[in-house]
Image (cartoon, rainbow, N blue to C red; front, side, top):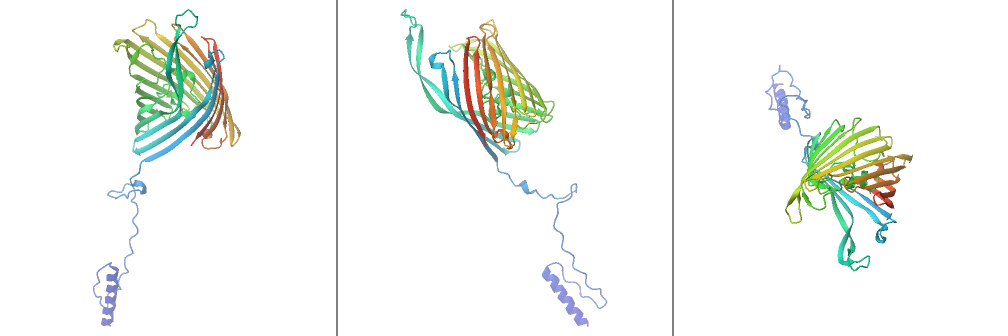
Length: 430
């Protein structure tokens, strides 16, 4: 019996040794308790409970190094325009041709808190080259009355940097952006090209500031968009209404604030998503101290250029109304009169769903500018009206496909001259 028990113990030890779990037990006597059952295998490791001291937290599945993220989008906006000016010179009475262009947008976020944005506008560019000049005698007195310049026009593909910026955003409420960008002086300067009611920005806006500029902008966003503000420094090459007889040098300082008491109001003209009631109040300031130089390169004096803007926007259930006022005062040490200019525009649209997949919106805009008010005032007015059609109104972005038919009227009150035109344009975003 003892020999049988010893053989059984040896077999048990041999089995345990093959499992690699434990050393063989001591030989058991006749009165020894039966061998204990083998310990259960340990359970698979689980993520430790939060707050456990000394616990080793396994890295999350997405902790692997990320490759730089790149998003590519763009738009096509071809169109045709026609403008007639009956009282102009014969060569200027009729203008027509294809208008519009295309845009490519690249967005990248290769590092935490850092991002880049590149927006390239592709369009046809008209280049005038002077090929000759001759004297002209209009009254036959053998005295030259003017110099007639002969030109030849070339249409070349143009490339325009709408935006090329690098952004550093250490917190949700603050961002620092630098590069090529539009000065956020007005609402329309902050609206994307594809978010405009009409194919182009309003004429008063283009008189005071147009296009992009080189500079740095510090932006703040507080209360989930209820208060937005920015402070920046720019070269000032996008500012219109410059002194013509001197070469100005100076940096532009910009400030802009927008208050949206009922929630964030993006700089998007129109209300294609028929949202809740929103109201936006804003204002901008540009200040440019300039040093003036004459043609010989010597200092001619100094000037101060101050421009202000004020805006009011409202949108609710498809209705959009926008009003903006612009003013500029420029004083210099050369003349004793300040140069003053004023401008304003208002625009309205109403998004009407005809059926789930189709909608239309009547649009209208009225603008006016008065330049050089203190010496020889020049007053110009514009009226734009038409319809926008949305064949994919049920898409996540209803204006991803849009057709705009626009009538335009330009009235030069000072010269007593009118111009009438028509523009048809299709916009496709991708």
